[in-house]
Length: 321
Image 1 (tube, rainbow, N blue to C red):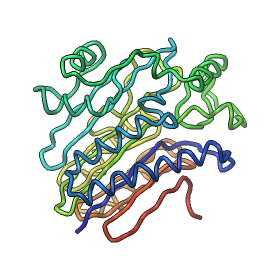
Image 2 (tube, rainbow, N blue to C red):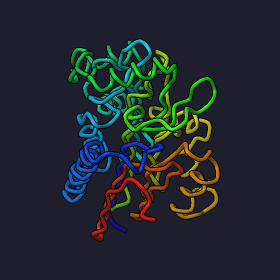
Image 3 (cartoon, rainbow, N blue to C red):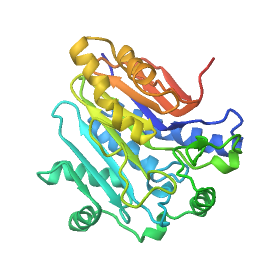
Image 4 (tube, helix red, strand yellow):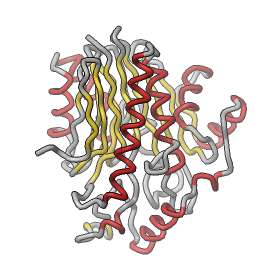
């Protein structure tokens, strides 16, 4: 048994031809955030603190679809969402519809710790943020030129952009041969899972949602058991097409297979990703109480990173093969 951490920055049809100017900043950001998490675990911080710390950092990096990099709704507005869960206690918190909160993941934790509830959304969540004194800014802070361009492209093509570079869905069919420039719609989510040397587990996931999504749409990231889950056996953070993740209760199913069938973390995660969800829809990162790590995906690629106490470390996008 030892500590372990895994981070995801989104899964999708990420082209192997992704230009270095788009690939390298994300790889560097994942390495940076991984190092922050590793140092926190080495300093004996609780996994709940670690996953919040790492996801806050990811939210502050505009290369990812969360926080500062959040994509825009069909009205050109921001609606961020996030959730966090502690494995040992199963306490959890979630938020949706945030327009001004700098770090959605920290507000989700406050919902967990400061209210009798699990989930707050929209005006109620914003009011709670003000009451708690968390950092807020004008919503224009989150609107980047890149995401305005992505929205304009999506609206011109009459599409909802699912994830980083999935072929856009238009009139029920996939648009053929999209260019990298046209499909650079940011990643679906950011997330982090961690376990300490005592087997304590935690998971956190945050997102800006879909490009050109309907106002009020809620995805998998704030749904406990969908995009985020942790118990005494494992911690899971999922990414990809939110509706597919919700239908398959991806994060909870990994834990359930371990709990009720007694399979390993890797077996459970592979079963959920490769057998129980449609190809091209899902990826996840997960750690077990024993310090195991797995990062399967059934998409072309997934921005991901992990490290373990025994010295293993990895930052990757595509399969080594």
